[in-house]
Length: 489
Ligand SMILES: Cc1ncc(COP(=O)(O)O)c(C=O)c1O
Image (cartoon, rainbow, N blue to C red; front, side, top):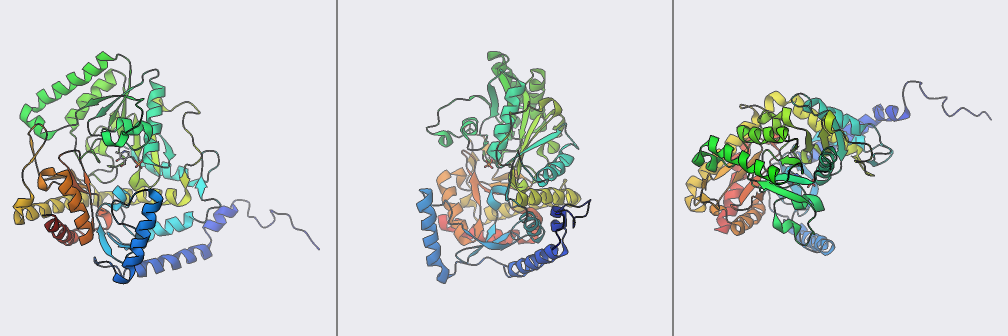
């Protein structure tokens, strides 16, 4: 019997892992699966109501979900695992327009063949999870793709991946605290949202989300930019007042502020769009007073008329620390050379999974490669936004009684639709929380998944999968919305 050396069959320049990933048999198998997904997905072409035969078992599944969670799901949404672009099939056999996409996660829609292929290739890794101690290379390729775009218009240099937006924000906060130790205060905008960890729910400006949580984080709040107030007061006076307000905090607690967290277009807070001059004036103060500028783009990234919201406002030069998540699948904290923390500050068992990193990297590449189509004033995201506003206007023209005046706590009147790019909101019922909640559920039943945002006035919000959504389909979505809203009235 002859024994062979374990390395005898190896080519000196290729690992077995590389051989496996480039194996024609693996790629042929992936193609077979993707073709099957494609042909199944193609059968979904329009909304449809639940299948009566499946409804009963669906209700049982909803109950099982409630039994393990301790409360029912907000929406009776459990996906079947197949969709087609902006349409998704649920386990009750119904098909709906997905206009919220996992709160901004599935920007390339459902059953997207290219992403499924990436995910399949990632899933043949030797392990499901990668970590800080032991990892395959996909995590770094994800960061390389992200940094290549980020470095174009900012000083951001490094990327540290994590498994969720709140964790990316936790890491950002630690980076800021370490750099500016012993400063322990944070400045944030009114109505901001940063995630659900103990610290982030304290910075986030929603009292309900921190009920019973002991307070340990010192936060000072600045008003977010308000177009109506700026117009009424005059822009210069509005900005001067805000700068005075910010300086007051800093003078009250000298040297104690580590960072100012900027969400340039607020998500949960109400799809409020910022303003360059306003932000620049506040950022100039931060620069002068040595306070880190931290930009949370977890909800905005990729979907405004520029890839990065800081590009939209031409403020990339100011950003010290930056967070991204949701659409990128893997989450990341980016920072400049000066903010690169000392070893030991950031780590954790998991960084993510091969499919997550591969799909996330591919999404960044798709946005990069399609940038000239997607972005800019005449890009498809801006065009979608205009089409959305047209739909709202004609809905309001047909049903003016659904759209009474929208006023805020100070009596300033607000438009009935707003947001920017792929962040779309409209405000029926004068922004009533109760009626908007009911409308969301009725619209869901009529075939469109949407959600709310804001803290009063409340709004209906959408984060549609724009790259795969046909602009001609807006009236079909608004037909569902109109039927649902009619039920509420
Ligand atoms: C601006 C912003 N930051 C942070 C988060 C938290 O992200 P995650 O829910 O992935 O923890 C969110 C989530 O909605 C967000 O919108």
